[in-house]
Image (cartoon, rainbow, N blue to C red; front, side, top):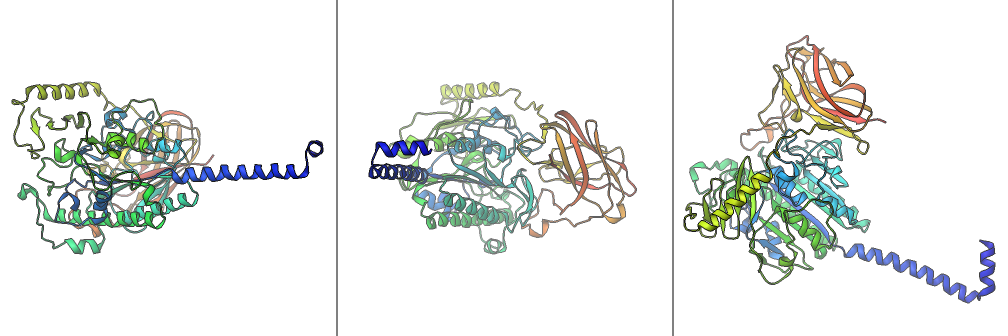
Length: 603
């Protein structure tokens, strides 16, 4: 270095050397500033997805039973889609949003017990944005797989706070997770998820890094729980607009759902206010939609169908998108679109490349969002669930029974017009048949549950995914938030087909409940040749919780604050195995009630 400096001094003047150094420093400064400006100019993205909120559960769509001014403002200040389509139920819609592909193609065929998982070769919208330098996070109900890398942290999200199951048993300070680690929620879950999203976005701003924030809220999905202030406004409210078959409407359920929707709206208002406070609203894309039709018979614009149905009312969702810098205020998009379009559209809007080898079913809507013209080629969008397939084009819907309806004039699907339009009916029937042929066998699921991973510390193995034998029963017919009970015989057992993804040593904890009178059972956990044996010595008999917050009678399971038993440390080897939990000795009337196994990698 000294020799090089002496040579430089001999060949140039001190002034020119100083000038050279200044130019180098200035160039470095310009490079840094340029990078920061580029980061600041790239639009942020905030996606809000509600759960079981139908198209009609917004005042912007004409429902006078409630007020949703903050969600409505997205339509006023941005674009709204006249006819936007999702799936009949939760996890399929989430999969289509995340992948840009029809949900059967990604392996999603159910809403629980492993059928909600997207195949691991799928690349998600979060993968796409993270590969382009965005920081990514999700807050709320994931519902597309729990065990890593099905977990959101394995699907492109840097952070996750919420729950991975399809529904949850209590919305007030429930057990949740923070990127795999079990934690306790703080207050009403939607408020809590919003708090965490705000914190994430603020940290991204401080780092001058563009963000992709995904808020899959879990309301107004049952159980029907909402803070007192919202319920007080609705519990005695007269419903001026009702379901088209009024005798089918449960007004108590409707009131609770609308109260939950107004709580969502309040939280959307908090998010929008923060974007204003941070001076990034103009360059932040905010998108709002719902995952299926309403979870009850209530006003929905006279459409036929609700959640679970492939009819218009079961799959039509609002889609509102605001980007003040680019999207004109009050724009109404008339061409049909669907959840499959959101990945390619958002990537195209922010000008980042798509990743992955799979062919997308969706298409970018950028041109129609940013242009003045509504000219768009006609297309067909498929709706599929539970063996039923419906097809929608711009004018017609072919239902799952083969009847054809002109939706603009007959949203209630009352008049079959197939005989008047035989060529169109045949064309759409062919599309339905071809789709069913393409997805044949997609629900023949041989995927084991993954246990352990080198890149992730925690693996949850819940009762939801287990198969019980003998006398053991679920606490409810819906597996998602259930636990196992009636464990009364040593021959009873629970098992999971697993694949150990990473050999190593794992600490194993079991969440259980057991009254003092039944304490003393010996529990055995085996995984292949490995076995752990532990005895229940501490009673833990918490009351059922959740019902104290219900506004109407639920159909889902109540829950408990389960205790934790340290089962010990287990050495696992890579490969397929059967994970089995049994009680070899039961001195009382029952062994225990079981909720979950938590494996924590320790080496």
